[in-house]
Image 1: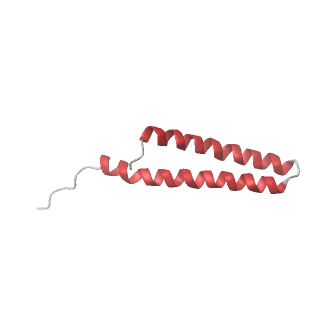
Image 2: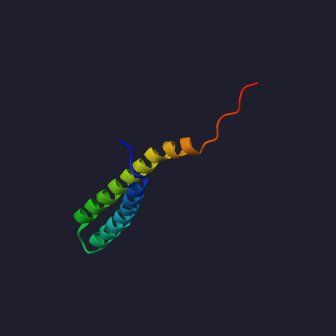
Image 3: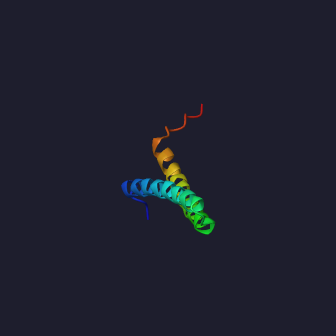
Length: 75
């Protein structure tokens, strides 16, 4: 089942926001004296980044195949 490119782009944007929000919360939690919560927020942000990267890599071959020119004919 192919992904809808529009919904995937929105998901990727949301994962970027999740990453930065989680990193900010991790910093805030750690500075306020709760390293356990800071570590959990770091894990949440890293999972968001890994999922975003995996989705981008999964989309990349499809986009390249559609844009690549045909190979030259052998002589």
